[in-house]
Amino acid sequence: MYLEEAIVLETAGPVARVKAVKGEGCGACTPGSCAFGGAEELLLEVDNPVGALVGQRVAIALEAGAILKASLLAYGVPILAAVLGGVAGGLYGAWFAPQQDAELLAFAFGGMAFAAAFLGVRAYDRRPGRHMEFRPRIVRVLE
Image (cartoon, rainbow, N blue to C red; front, side, top):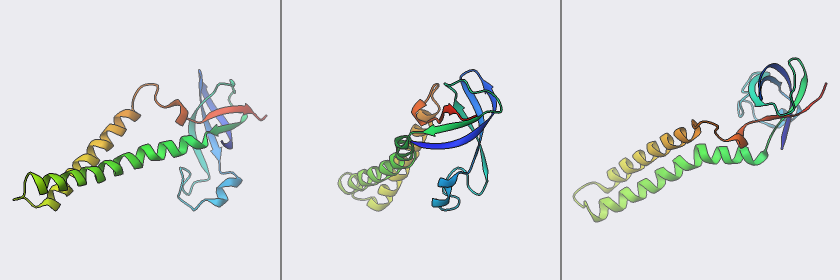
């Protein structure tokens, strides 16, 4: 579980908007490799199950497995679809359309599969009440 400190800026029911400041753990990352990028602060919308109030310093947490799952969903699924689409296009070109260029069909099928997978992941991500395990949450009030 990744823990960071933040300050609550506003609350709306079970959700809070917080300002997270780069912590000590950020020194191990390469610049620009996370949501902070080059900024020192990051505004986040987080779940607020502890009922933190505006102005309080809080600890926010994100499950370590959630980052891996989100990365695989966002990057792995489209890349896998492109590879499988390319293989399917190459086989189709070799077996059913020998007069066509098999590499061109592999490229076209791979591109279409990549686009379809990307759009599918995007639609999956936009569902109402989506992926609560991917959202950070306030785990305790520090002050």
